[in-house]
Image (cartoon, rainbow, N blue to C red; front, side):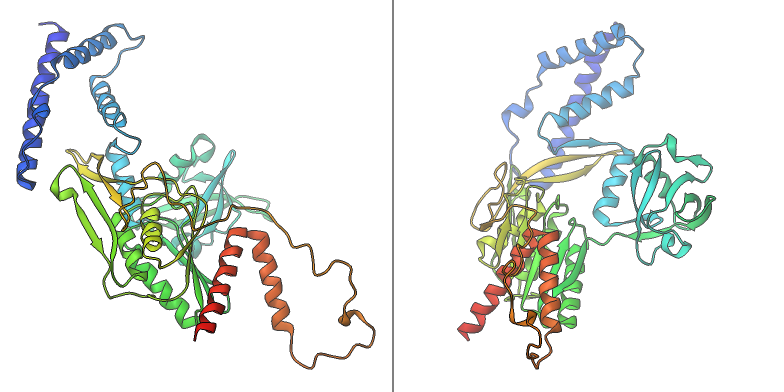
Length: 435
């Protein structure tokens, strides 16, 4: 029997087994009858596949491993569906789990490539790297006995990660030191915070969500409580710019932190169990505080769910530029040998029934990023305080001057955020006038 017939027979058997598996799974989840087209084997296409497989095996310039060919075929089959469905081998599956859980065994440093070495951007607070004395600006030249010059950034990061309790020796160059320093760091569980907060100025808070992980909702509530404890809040900026999304439930949790009732998002797919409705409940952290949400072209998926829900429910003003437009839901389906596929199984819709797939969320107020600077206070006009012997104000005005300086600095660093704060102040004034 030639290779062509062998592959063809194997493919037929494989397809039959796969179809039986799908039918069994569907029967366990729903009573829906599979499409008639799903029962028909595309024999002509399978013959084509077998023929191409045979040509590659016989004619490619170098021998190709059978397992690699078939695995690449699986990758191509999923990649051809849409940009977000894909096959994951063991390492890729583990990396995804780390990304969504927000914790891993490692050192606790943010790094970047600076050929031929790796520069430490910052050690994360209260992590093994910080406790061992790693400092921002250090250049890592070796990991244990392996030079980093021969590694990619991804390879170096993977080498630094590992089981908690395992040591690693970093050889670093540090400004002001003539010789390299060897620092031994003991790996530990690193928790990556997806929510960061700070006070922009008295009365106005800022929260940034970098990605939607399993615990993002809980982290958000804690940060909101922290801001409320530090100062009396008059308004809040929720920054979702360049947030690629993440876990669907996390987006629901974030929406629920600001909404006390109504729909947050709903999904629709081919199978009944893909149709889900997520609604807000009364356990809301900030149901009434003036809120501005910042989005841009890097805000996708879960970010768009939150922005769309708050916009439709008229809970927040959405500011910035159009979002990315990823309105589909991917389900992780584990396979044998710690592998998995990420498969698009549904579309999601905002409370008003909008699908933002390939369209995005349009902001209520469009504000592009810009580099601006104030022209000054009146140019060269002479003011009372410039006159020799002028009468003192009689009141402390340093706080007001400091506040003006902070506003100018914010304008210089982040124009969109500056505009968001300006809007919050206007909303606060209106709210006071209504009382």
